[in-house]
Image (cartoon, rainbow, N blue to C red):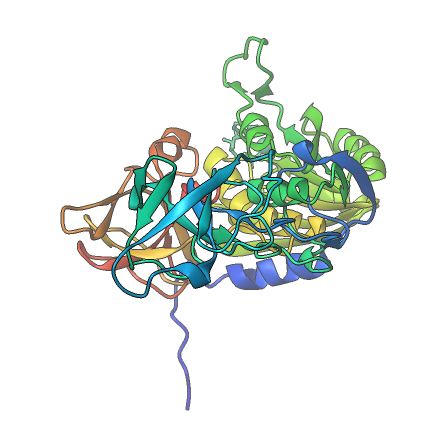
Length: 419
Ligand code: AMP
Ligand code: MG
């Protein structure tokens, strides 16, 4: 069979690679970094665990009462009618009962209190009738109820956390419950960032006519502001091959990753590629994605290099779709947070060209029937950062998809799982 290629399509250009291919190649080339540090567990949130954690004792360490009430022998429970139990004493969390509770007796007990060996059941105080120094209970209760058994959470010897785990607040709590004050975590990833462009000005400077403030470095610093990353701020680099080469070579000595923005298209002042060809290894791709099409990817010294396009929306889209997965791989995170993707009804028509993945910006909401809907934030130009700021989700229109009519289903990815 002869297949015809769609003609006169600006997407049929040589060197244009599908988004997934770009991601696969990036992940294949991004190495996991070695090295770890020992830190206090309260500082370990979102750090990658670099050891196996095994429980050296049971949690809970002892069987204890799960409610405030009366502990007794389960075998004494009435099968029918009611039964009276004499109260033999009182026990509090941290002050266990010293005496013996005989058959037919009970013990007033508070939540968390060590259960005397001979008792196995607690009746909630709301379910008893107190009569002087005795209680009356009916036949609704089961032997063994309302106690927390020794080791029911964690058994001695059990492995509770594996290397590669990005630590969460409950993980930190688990470590504490095992009496572990410090742990080994993967060292922080060192990520160097640079903006390029003669028209780009730092905050505090006064831009000349045609100049503009550097927003890319700030959105990237914010996106990279996480406990497992050290940011190395390389500032703004002028559009001169020698200047770019100098900065990138330096950063390649101490960073794990270099991210630059701007200077990767085909204009006459786009020198990022040139600089890298001189000293590093560079693959330049046109990724079939909008926005964010040109991408320089490679190696500079010890660092993995990402040359992102200059437009502010392109920077963020390529960061979240292509750079972040690589950073997570380099950090060795095995339980990376799930950035959910689901289907929503578009409330309006969306213009789309087949042959590239389009990452449009939208506002998702649940309608009265509980259905998720999405509307566009308006103009989708790659320089319109306000439209991305207003959005709460990406609308991901797949490679082969054409324009979308109102009420069609589209894939959306909430920023809540990404940012
Ligand atoms: P370039 O890829 O260098 O041609 O830049 C593409 C567009 O993005 C140009 O209009 C630049 O002015 C703009 N741009 C580049 N870098 C930045 C930056 N750091 N902050 C804001 N806009 C930028
Ligand atoms: Mg530029």
